[in-house]
Amino acid sequence: MKKITKLATTALLTVGAMATSYAQGNQQNIGAKCGCPAVNVRPTANISIKGTTNARGVSEFVGNVRLSCDTLWELNGQFYMPSPYTLTIDPGTVIQGIYNADPLFTGALFIERGAKINAAGTKDCGIILTTNQDNLDGTYSLTNVSKWGGIAIAGIAGNNLTQLANSAAGKLAAGTGADGVGNAEGFAVNANGVTRFGAGDNQFQTVNNADNSGVMTYVSLRHTGALLGGSAAGNEMNGLSLYSVGSGTKIEHIELLAAGDDDIEYFGGTVNVKYISSFFGDDDKFDFDLGYKGKAQFLFALAADSLNSGDLQTSDNGFECDADDQFGVNKSTFPFQSSPQIWNATFISNGKVNARYDNTGHAGIMAKEMVAGSFRNCILANFRSGVHLSQARSNSVQKGDAYDQWTNGTPAYVGTWTTAGGAFPVAQSLTIKDNVIITSNDGKHFGFTKGNLVKLTGATTGTFQKDLTGSVLFNETPTAPSAADTLQFLTTDRNQIVTSVAGITLPLAFNGTNSLITTEVHAIPSTDLISASTPAADGFFTVVNYKGAFSASEKNGSWLSDSGLIAMKSLTNANPTDINQDGITNIDDFALLIGKYGQLDK
Image (tube, rainbow, N blue to C red; front, side):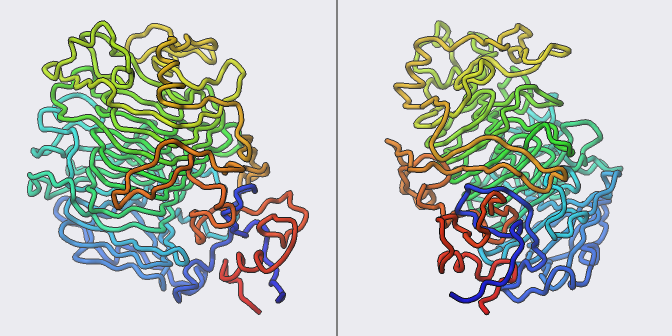
């Protein structure tokens, strides 16, 4: 075989192997395959040259804007793309958000209602948005969160924020006169009273669930989550925030690293997403609210070690599922439930038990109020609870919790379910089926729980309470689900609760600088876990019959981005040229290196 030029092991990207250590690779040559210069020789320019400060006191792009890969773009402050224009980000482009303790000067991008983003990266030529503190040489700590804002997109699909609901107390209160519009978490209100939605809200009075906000493919969003909405926890931006984004939008192959809040959060809308990977975020992995009704397939998330010495101290749920965003028990103003269809996720958590800040538990699926839809063929590992169903409102007056909608039973109050009270409970409208939950048998981690995993104020470690009621439910020895619930969960719905799956390992440990995980992480089963159910052949879903985000046959060809962040070469491998770890060095290993990080065939 031809000579393979030496390449640092921490920069290798053999993503399919998955039986390896994680590191942030040197990506100075991002975009080389599409003619982009090395990052360190690109001239620097501030995005402000493309915009202006408008009458509302916010920085706004003027007309259609293109950001090309021949320039290293800096983002100082929040920039808005107004309707009807498009922000185009070329493949291979790098944008660095500048961190500033003053929220008004910390970088963030917002695509307003009626505007579009065209960030169509490719497998060999991705797009990176990161902090200006990250020079992309592989040395920046993986656990640095909240070093710039992130991206927020607002569409005109439906959500639960009616004008009446906007007058209620809650995070998304104070609408601007149109249904489906309100101030959302993460952005500060400036001196002119303007938040992310900006001007033009009232011109979109008609909901369009097929709305198109553009394209995002092969985009890596790193170190997001700055506290732009104020200094208190809970005011962070997410890695990617999607507000009423419609199904005409294409969002695929998105990679998120070290988000200070949720990796992706959906506030209503119908957008479909596919091939989403997230690593080491500080809150939920996939958070939906306010009537989200989209589809999702092939999701992978890995939590960080919550005891490492970096900024990261926690991580929360895998899926956090809600429809009222903490507006309270009166839901008469909300038109519909959240009801997404989710298939083929693999989420590996860090085994964390204690709540912190605004986190409400540590469940693979944390299903809360007005949650319908389906979760199928997922693998959920190392969470406090694999699946948790809220039942704080499970009575004849306060209805509509996830437990009410999941159960096949007939609670005494089922006959009182009416929409007149605004509860919208529908028996069996929430499907959780054919999933695998991997949990340790230590008395602190469980496969299936009810109530709510909210830490009591000032309580001792491991003590939790039911949401809103104040009564203690969940402690070191929680109340087990009933026999009928267990029968439904394990037999009727064919979920499995196991202590291990061959090929998947759980422990995580960072090195001293938090730039590398030093224990091997295996995320793919040794053999496919075959499911009795498959998604519909509807043009969006890929019809596969295995459980989890990856097939066992993908070990040498995963869908994780080749231009992405995660280096998958094991430090424990004695033969550094055996890239695919099959025991020999041959042409198959060489093929994995061609074109990676400037690797040439010489």
